[in-house]
Length: 244
Image 1 (cartoon, rainbow, N blue to C red):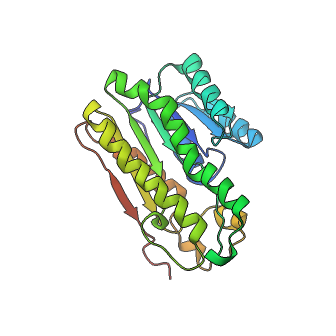
Image 2 (cartoon, rainbow, N blue to C red):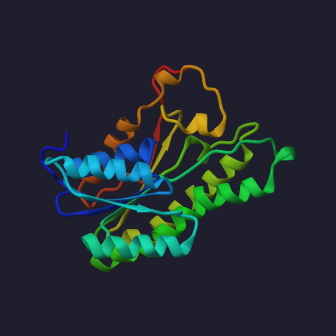
């Protein structure tokens, strides 16, 4: 994996890097030669991943920056730390997210606000403070890890689904704004992923062992980035093959 180091010298910021898709993607991009900035609220996990990447002679370097992506002052600090350590941002992977599920008549407003701040506003703020590096140099990519819930609604999913629909709208508008500057916007819409997401959200999912692996999604991110700059994967649905 990544033996040709096709991202050598590139700078990638990965949010939600402490677990799941974000963690797998950070590992993959580092193995491809990128210098990765790891962002998450869980500083301990970020430090462990950074040590793992930095001990490897096969890939790029890693910088952990504990960040709450829903707070603009922390995102500004993340962007500034990235530029000081590695230079301008080439790739931004918006993978931070959490789950909260409730029927419409039972929604807790405070939890909805927190969910929107992490799942939607975090991607908006990170993009706001990093995409100009890409448009100014006419190269780069913003990767957005969405969900099948960003395309269809389901009973009891109202808060989570709403954040993901908002995220899709943001991604499509961003594409319209930046593609003429040779910047790609790549959105992945996975269904069930084998991660700790469901436990953290208090959901029991049967057959989770057949779900998509975070590593497979990281490979899809890598594959989309490998395409020539004149070609973009704008939206990609990803489903488990045989999970019931």
